[in-house]
Length: 122
Image 1: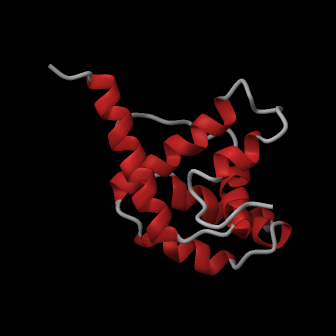
Image 2 (image 1 turned 135 degrees about the vertical axis):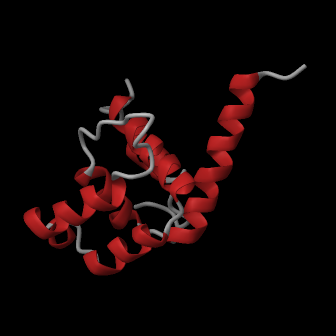
């Protein structure tokens, strides 16, 4: 017998790890994504389809790439190339960040960034 929730958590972790490898984000690129997607609404039928559009709009309309000192065009292109299941994992990562009870705790951002960013977050 198996624990379905544990298997789903493992699948999420593996997908997030694969997304981290593919995206090769800097800490500020991850922060830009989190900032762009604050308030992201997830719907099961649309999971994995919001991320690129949210970041693209935030860069174009709100200049979040300037705020976070990142190359917005490069970030959007990497998000565009990410397969939908991996994009869904990143969207869940975003939702977990903003929904956490630890949101205002010291160290929460660094802890969460470490799940998606390969280099150490300052």
